[in-house]
Length: 306
Image 1: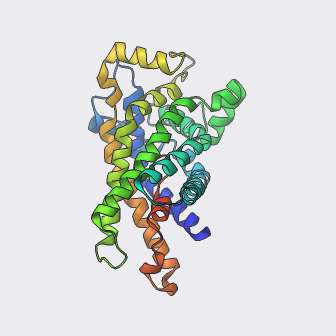
Image 2: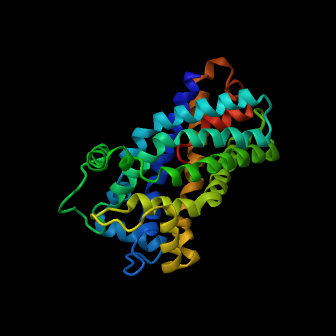
């Protein structure tokens, strides 16, 4: 159990390192001012950040997800595994329910973590070296928000995070279960690892597509107030203003970078987890002994916050 937990944490960390630059691009596109847009699209945003802020600009806010990985993976692993055992049968429906339960409960850690990440990613936009940094790092960001706004402040966007994560994790586990069953991922299959990589990557894409409009609203709510001006009064008001100003396309802002990020992040996580378990359990009979039940493998490989 402890080994599975460590493997999941390492896999999640690898996923963050691979996917964070795309996440920075996603957030910038989601929250940019439509009246004075800084970026024309995914590629232009990526190039602008590197040119104006250096390559390190793509990794702004990475401290927050790296710090929260252990707690998020612990919650996801424990809840998903215990829920599957409680439900008794390994079926696609139970995979969805177990994933949804895990997604809902991990919001307690995920929401403050993503708030700090979003605020750090927005800090110093367009500046190679920020003249005045409001936050020193992710932890300082949360401390300052707490001192100014209290518990409600560090949980800004909790409801939208819950609405995103609950079905999102459910879809992830459901899609992964269906894909691995369809592809026939057996321990003795020489192509098992590529199949797992493909199943994990596609499951991540399916999960993001299913909840992406909610993620746009969440990002806007968590970025709201940067600079001292609050634009939205809540989820409904954010949806209304966004729709009126930008139309339905607002709910797809940053989707390209998100999907580009989703596949390698999930694929990297699966590969890291599998290779780590193969190495650590090499004396116990190789890969076959490393392969747990389908729901347990999905549980190990699931990255934090998709």
